[in-house]
Image (cartoon, rainbow, N blue to C red; front, side, top):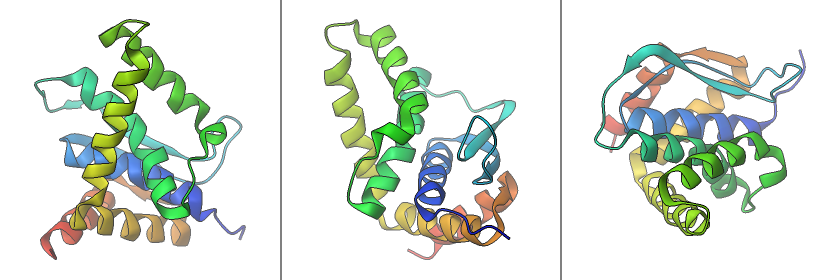
Length: 154
C-alpha cells in the first residue's frame, strides 16, 4: 500500500470540517490521488441546507483546505491548491468585483482560520485527517460521525 500524504489529508479534512460546520453535507472524502486531484472532498448533490449567504459559505469551504493544511504545516502551499484558489477568486469577484475581491478573500481566510481555531473543529480536522491517512477514503457518514464526536468532546 502506498503511504498517503498527511498534508493532503489535512487539506481535505479542512474542506470537510468547514463544510459540516456550515451545514453542508459531505458525501465522501478521499486522499487517493487520480489524474486530476491529489484528494477530494465531495458533497452530496441536492442536499444543501440553505444558508443566508451561500456564496460566502462556498468560499469558506474552498478556503478550508488551504487553511487547515497551513495550520498543520506552518505554510500556505498555494501551488498545490490552484483549483481551490481559482474557485475562491471567481466567487470573490462575483461578490465584490475585481477591485475588492482580494480584500474579501483575505477577510474570509481570516474567518476560516478562526473557525478552525475552535477546539472541536480543529480536533475534528485532526481525527478526520488521521482516518484519511489510515484508509485513504472515508464516507460522508463517517466524516460526520467523527466531526460530531470531536465537537461533543469539547
